[in-house]
Length: 110
Image (cartoon, rainbow, N blue to C red):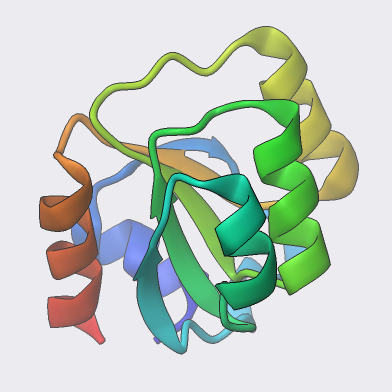
């Protein structure tokens, strides 16, 4: 499933969609809020679900080549994070769902 298909099927709110969203395949759902752990464990192509919505989250997403980042539990996403997602062309989505439920939604679509 591609990132674009995931967006269409789940209804997650879109903050930014990367230009590559039509081709980027999602390999799995991955949940982690500790950035130092995520940095070494987010699988390439993962839909990373977290409540951490800061600039460092985007840096880790870029480093690990996550397919997208989903900010769960309605965590606030400030303007600098929105702008950085656009600058780095990282697909950034959000949802009111708890982390587990968001990951389960991704998993069920895969």
